[in-house]
Amino acid sequence: MFDKHTLSLYKRLLTYIKPHWKVVLITLIALAIAAAMEPMMPALLKPLVDDSLIGKDADAIVQIPLLIMLVFIVKGIAEYASKVTSEWVAHKAILAIRSEMFAKMNNLPQQVHHDYSTGKLLSKVTYDVPQVGASLSQAWIIIIRDTLIILGLLGFLLYTSWQLTLMMIVIGPVIAFIIDRASRLMRQSSKEMQNSMGELTQRLEEGLNGHKEIKIYGAESYEQQRFHDTAENLRQHTMAVVKVSAANVPLVQMLAAIALAGVLYVASLMSAQDLFTPGEFIAFITAMAMIFEPIRRLTNINATIQKGMAASESIFELLDQPEEPDTGTRTLDTPEGKIAFQNVSFTYAGSNRPALENLTLTLPAKQTTALVGQSGSGKTTLANLITRFYQPQEGQILIDQTPISEVELHNLRDQIAYVSQNVILFNDTLAANIAYGQKDIPEERIIQAAKSAHAWEFIEKLPNGLQTIVGDQGSSLSGGQRQRIAIARAFLKNAPILIMDEATSALDNQSEKMIQIAMNELRQNRTVIIIAHRLSTIESADQIVVLEQGRLAELGTHQNLLEQKGIYAKLYQQGHDIDE
Image (tube, rainbow, N blue to C red; front, top):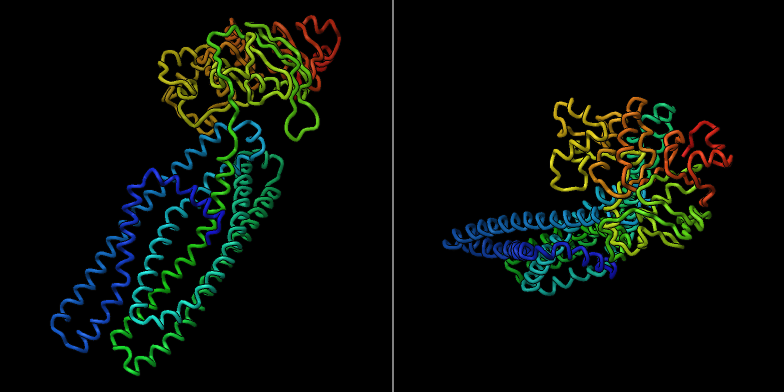
C-alpha cells in the first residue's frame, strides 16, 4: 500500500495540513479514544455472561449495561469529533492546493499553456484535487483509527488466548501480498483514469465553446462520437479500478474467514474442555469477529489512497513546473518607449523554422509602427517577445537602451497596454473589466475611459450601468461593445507602450469611425505597435514594417512602400486585407 514513492507523495501532501496541527492533534486524540472503546466491548461481554447471566451478581446486572452504554456514548462523541475535524483539515488543505495551483497557472511560461490543453488544466483542479482531498480526509483517519482498533483488539485476544491469536495472525503476510499487488494495479489504472478525465474535460470545453461551428458545419454526430469514445475510455479505466478494488476486499475476507473457521473449531474444543469460561469464549469470538471490519476498511481504503496518489502526481507535475523566469532587477519609471530589436532570433518549441530570424529593428518612441505580413511572418511573435511571454534564443530587445531581460517582469508589463483582436472579458461588472488589474480606481476615471472609447454611450443605457455583469466572455455584449470595453481598459491603464492586434476588426463601420477617432487620441504621446490585418487601417502609421518568414522585408511609410512596388504594394493591391 505504501511503497517509498507513495510515502514521499503522501508526506508532501501532509505539508498542506501541517499549519493546522492543533486541529490535527484534536483529531488524533479523538481517534485514539474511539479506537480504545472497541476492545472495551468484548471485554465487557465476559463479565456480562459470567457474572450477570450465569453468576446472577446483582451489582454486575446494573453496572455492566451502564458501562456498555457509556462506551457507546464516548465512542459516538469521539467519532463525531474526529470526522468533523478531519474534514475541516482536509478542506483547508484542498483550498490551499487549489489556490497554489491557480497561482502557478498564472505564473507559468506561455509555452506551458501552449503545451497543456485548457481542458487538462481544468481537470487537474476540478477532478484531481477532490481525489487528493479524499486521501487527506478519509485515508489517514481510517489508517490511524483502524490500526489502533486492530492493535487494541489483538491485545485483548492475546491476553485472552495467545495460542488462538497466533493461529489467526498467520494469514497476515498473505493479506499484505494481496494488498500490495492490488495497490500497483489500481495506481496505474487511476493514472489512466485521470488522463481520460482530462481528455473528457477538453472535449466538453471544445463542444461548449464551439457549439455554433458544430451546428453550422453539421458536425454534431462527429463530435458526439468523439465525446462518446473519450467517455468510453474513461469508463473502461474506471471499471479496471473497480474490478481490482472489488476483488481485493472479498479475497482478504475469504482468507480471514478460513482463519476464523479454524480458530472457532479450536476454541470450541478448548471450551468443551473447560479451558474457556462461557464469557471468555463469547468475548474472544466477538473480538475476533470485530477485528475483520477494520481490516476490511483498511483494505478498501487502498483504492482511495491509490487514486489520491495518482492525482497528487498529476497535481505536483503542474506545481513543479518552473515559473516564468524573472531575473530582472531594474525598473522603468517613465520610459520614452523606444524599442530596439538587435539580431533577435526565436523558434517555437517543436518547430523547425524560426518565427523570427536575426531581426534588427527600431520602433521609435511615441510613434506608431504597423506590423504587416502574411500568416506566420512573425508579427504576433514580435509582440510576444516585447511583453516577454517568450524569451529570444539569440539577440536582445531594449526599451530606452535598457535590455528588457534586465527589467523586473511586472514593471515591464506595467508599461504596456494590450488590445487584442480576440477580446477577453471576465464574468464581472463592466467597471471591473475596464479597471481590470487596478485597485481603488475612482468611478470618474472609469467613466472617462469609457467615454474616450465611445463605450459610455451604451453603458449608460444599461439598467445597472457600470455595475452590469457582462456574462461569460462578455456574452451579454455585442462584438463591437466588447471591443470598446477592451479599448477603454487600455485608455484607463494609460501605459507608454500600446500593442494593438487590429483592435477595430470586430466593429461595424459606424463604430469603427468613432473608435478610429478615439484611437488617434490614444496614440498621442505613446509608442504604438499595430499588428495589421487590414491595410486600410494603418495608412497613417509613422512607419510600416513588412515581415516575411521572420525576417525584415520592407520598412517605410505607406506612400514609400507603395512606390517601392514590393511586397507591401502587392498586398495592398490584392484588396487591403491580410489573413492572419
